[in-house]
Image (tube, rainbow, N blue to C red; front, side, top):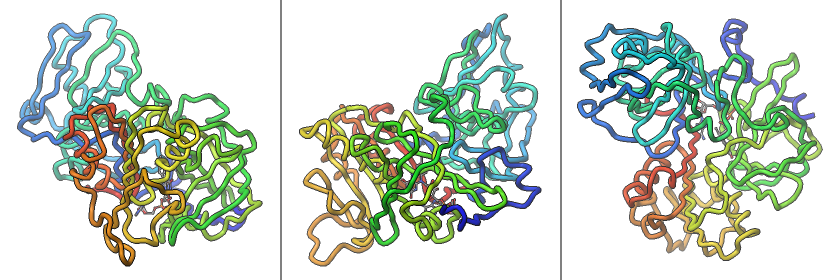
Length: 434
Ligand SMILES: Cc1cc2nc3c(=O)[nH]c(=O)nc-3n(C[C@H](O)[C@H](O)[C@H](O)COP(=O)(O)OP(=O)(O)OC[C@H]3O[C@@H](n4cnc5c(N)ncnc54)[C@H](O)[C@@H]3O)c2cc1C
C-alpha cells in the first residue's frame, strides 16, 4: 500500500490534542467563500436583529464599538480540514447584542444573514453563553474583506461556515430552518469535535478503500489518479472526494480533491492533483502512489458547486481550478452534446495546461506568464471584457481557482447583472490576507 511510504507531518502531542478529528494545522488563513466577495465600507455597514423579537434593532459599527469589547483567543476549524491555532478576534459577544432586543417566548434559533445572500442557522444556545462573537478585528488589525470584513460572526466551537462573513443580520426564529450550506449537504450542527461535516447518506460519509487503477501525468506539476472505490457511487460533476493517507503509527492526513471525470466515464473516478513543493499530501500522491495501491476515500461530497444541467453554462477556471470544471465539460459532452457551454481557462504557461488534448472549440485559454511560441490567442489575466463576451444575465457560471482569481472573475460576472445564485464559486490555494 502507498500508505506504507507515507510518513506525513504528525503534529506534537500537545497540538494533536487541540485538533478535532480529521483536521490539520494551517499556519495561514485560507479563504473559502461562496460567491463574490462583497465590498462594504465600514461607515455603510449595518446589521439588524429581527424576527421573533418585540422590536427589531438596526446597529452601525459605531453602535457595536460603544458596547463592551470582547476578545476570542483560540482555535478555529474549517470543514475543509484545516485548523488555525492561537488566533484572536475582537468585537462584542453575541450575548451583548441579543440583550439589545426582547426575545419573544418560544424563540429557539437564529439565522445569520450575510451581505450577498449567504445564510447559516444556529440554535440560540450556540450564540449565547460567551461562545459567539460579532467581530471586526483579527490579530489586532481591521478584519480583512476576504475574511468577512468589516464585520463577521464568529462561532469558534462550530465549523467556520457557521461564522457568517460580511454579517448583515440575525433573524431570531421560533424553529430551526436550514441555512445555505445546511441545505446543500453540510451537517445541520457542524460540531468539529463530533466531526459533523456532512448530512449526506452514511455510505458517502464513511471512509472506504479505493484502488488506484491507473495514473497519468497531466502537466509538469499535475498528475491524474484513476480510483476505483470498493463501493462506487455516481458523483455529480463539481463534487469532490476526501482522500485520507495513514502513516505507520496511526497518524492520518486528509485533503479534498474534485472529481475530474464524468460519472458516465466508468465505474471509477479520476482526480487531478497539483504537486505543492512544501505540501504534506500532494507530493505523496505524486511521487509514491502507483497503480494497484489502495488509498482511503470518502464521498462524493458537496452539493452546491455542482452542475445539474443548467444552461447556458460558463466555466471559468484558473490553474488546477479547472479540475471540477473538466468534470462538468466531460459530462456535458455525454449528456448534452449541443449544450451552450464555454470554458475560460487561465494558466501560467504551456507546461501547466491540463487536459490539453481534450480542449476543443468551446475553450478559450489565456496564458498569464508565457504563451507557447507563435501563440495568437489571449495572454494576461482574464479581463471583464473577455468574461462579458461569454456571459448573459441568465448564464449559470462556475468559477474555480485561487482566491484572487475567483474573486475578480466573480466580480466581473456580478457586474454583468448575474445574480448571486448564478455565480457559483469554489476556491482553494494559498492562504489569503490576514
Ligand atoms: C473542495 C476542494 C477541492 C479541491 N480539489 C483539488 C483538486 O482537484 N486538485 C488539487 O490539486 N487540489 C485540490 N484541492 C486542494 C487540496 O485539498 C489540498 O489543499 C492541496 O493538494 C494541498 O495539500 P498538501 O497536503 O499537499 O499541502 P498542505 O501541506 O496542506 O499545504 C502547504 C501550504 O501550501 C498552501 N497551499 C495550499 N494550496 C496551495 C496552492 N494551490 N498554491 C500555493 N499554496 C498552497 C497551504 O495554505 C499551506 O500553507 C481542493 C480543495 C478543496 C477544499
